[in-house]
Amino acid sequence: MSDLPRSRVRRLLWPIVLLATLPLAACGREPALRDGDIIFHTSRSAQSATIQRATHSRYSHMGLVLHKDGKPYVFEAVSTVKFTPLAQWIARGEGGSYVVKRWREAPQRLDAAGAARLRREATALAGRPYDLAFAWSDARIYCSELVWKAYQRAFGVRLGETQRLRDFDLTDAAVKAKLHERYGQQIPLDEIVISPAAMFDSELLQTVASE
Image (cartoon, rainbow, N blue to C red; front, side, top):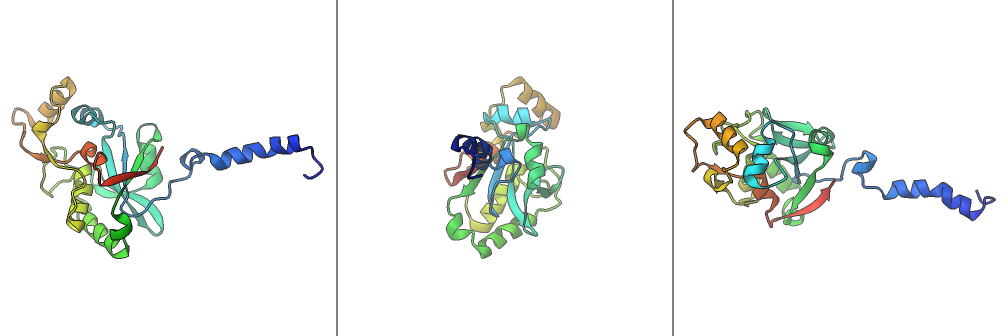
């Protein structure tokens, strides 16, 4: 290599340097995450557009990052509350895009004991069926409810403020159709709800990764 002209050396090394500077996700690698991180994406589910329009947010699905055997998973509420490998969860979102947020108090409170407490509260809901009606009981669980309740029960913290169903934008035609499909004429407008949008906008969280 030392006998080559410097200009040619630079040309040979440039692709290597470029690869080293690419974001991790662009290289097919997963972001370095910690237990307790919260990950958001735009779901490709049938109800995603309805959630986006009602909440005026790009993000319609979310989950809690937890590791098993050293590998990152997303603990989420989909058909049931379960673990999904991180790479699989990311690939399931629109365009493979995502945002990861972290509790601002994580360095002080999410030590080994804190992380274990959060895991216990979250996994206590494992196996519960997905809640299409967005009710506030634990009988069925939806995505943001799972993460919000895990943190609130583990640490007494509210990562985003709950709202009533009536507080969302229910004027859109698609939203009206979905409400009629789910509830008929008996729409529970006073039901307590926590949305992905409310958690995404919480000042108690900071962004640590995105793609």
